[in-house]
Length: 147
Image (cartoon, rainbow, N blue to C red; front, side, top):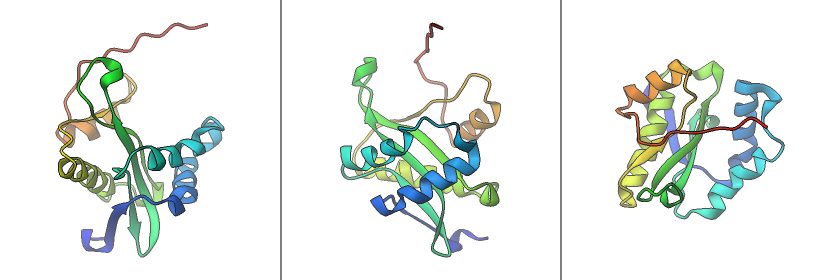
């Protein structure tokens, strides 16, 4: 599969079912029941949208969802990648890289000056992926309390 065979475009409401299907294929049914509602919330909350999907032969096979925030963490506003996924049948073909590039380009066009992403501390694979896309460790530290 070449980059010419991949179309990256802004996410639209009609993509919700494909995004949810890809996510379930990756993580199973473990997501909170409210997670599908969040997909549309991103599209409704921020315009122009910065979330995108990847298509191969007209089929949605990947996505990146994010919005603009930061002030709530005492930081300048920036784009935050909340979740991204590539259908396991299409992983390892550069789709994640292309989705990140589209997201970053959309941010540039909207004069958004920074892009952020979260990972779990031990998720070496995802950390390596973000590092390979020129992301560097940021300034936020999470604290948690088990109840």
